[in-house]
Image (tube, rainbow, N blue to C red):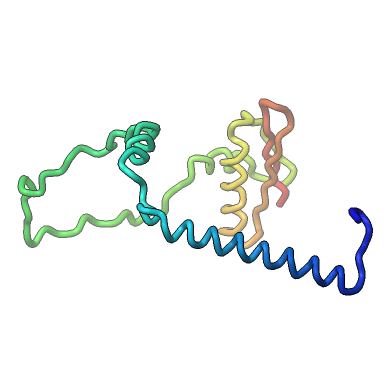
Length: 147
């Protein structure tokens, strides 16, 4: 009776048999795992095979440090922090645009950096100065001063 739906006692019996077979198979798997001699650990042959396929470790980027060669000093004053604010490398490009409606054509590689600088300039001026940066071709971008 393949393909036909069973009702009544025959269907109940078949479901019970299928459940019992699945439970027995799961129980057999559980016993097979518990009886494994290595208990989840690799054997020496498996470990050797796995280590043969691993990539070698990358060399360290830092030279080895010998802490016994370092000299500890007391009462050395802290270096002063710079007092002037740091200027973005993109600020001179934005400073070229002195009024709304002006624009400048720049290399396309500058697009992302100028967008970030324009966003920071807008935040710093509370929206009084707004720039728009867009790619106009594959190799060029344009910066507009909107406000």
